[in-house]
Image 1 (cartoon, helix red, strand yellow):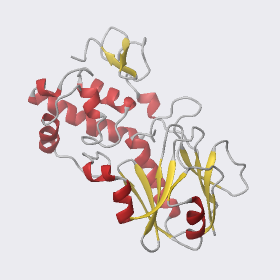
Image 2 (cartoon, one colour):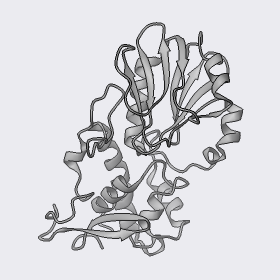
Image 3 (spheres, rainbow, N blue to C red):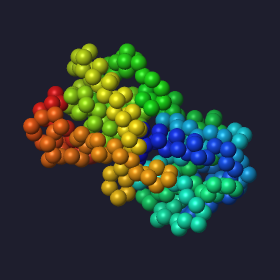
Image 4 (cartoon, rainbow, N blue to C red):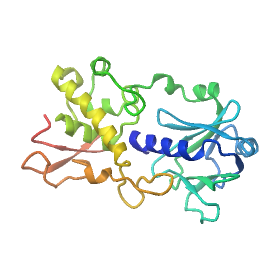
Length: 277
C-alpha cells in the first residue's frame, strides 16, 4: 500500500480539488469493495451531499460530507484514487466511481481487490478501526519532538526496521522509507532499540523527519509501471533520490562497496554493510 508521503500527498491533492463539490451519483462496479454499511446504502446516501473536508487518519483517507458522515478509503497494493473526466475510459480494476455535479469523477482503481470503502460517522469509524486510538507519531501531520521520539523508541524492544514499521510507533512507514531512514541514520536494520546510544537515537530522529519531508517534496516514490501516481495520474520523483531501496548491487553512495539485499520477514531489506552499523 502507499506509505506516509504518498498518502499525505494524496490527501492534500484531494482536499484542494474536492472540497465544496457536490456528489451527483455513485457507481460500485466491483462487489465487496464497500465494507460498511452496504453497497446499496452507500449508493443511496451519497448523491446530493457536498464534500466538506479531506483528512488522513493514520493511513485511512476520509472524505468528510455534509452532516455527520465520511466516505473512508483504505488503500491496498496498487490501489489508486484518480480524478478523471467522466468520458475517460475506465481503468482495469475500477471499483468505485463518484461523479460530481461539476468537476468530473473520483475513481477508486483497485486491480488487486485490496482496497475498501466505508460510509461511517465519527463514532462508527472508531468502532470499526480501533487501531486509530493507538497510532504513533505522524511525521507528516505534526512536528515531532526529539525527546518524545526517543522516549517512545526506548519503550520498545525490537529490531529497528520492525519498530519503524510499527504503526503504534510511526504512522505509515513501510519497506521503502524504513530502509531509506536507516541508511540516512547509519544504522543496521537488525539493531535492537535497547542498544542505541543517545547520539544514534538523535540521528534516527533526524532521518525520520528529513526522509518523510523530502519524499513529500519530490512527490512520493513511483517504482515500476504500476507504481504510485497522484490523483491526476502524475508520478512522483523521489525514486530518483533513493539511496538503497531496490538498489542492490549498485555502489553505496557513502562507501566503496555495493548495496546489499537481505531477507527480512516475508520480504527484503536493502542496506550498506560498511556504513550502517
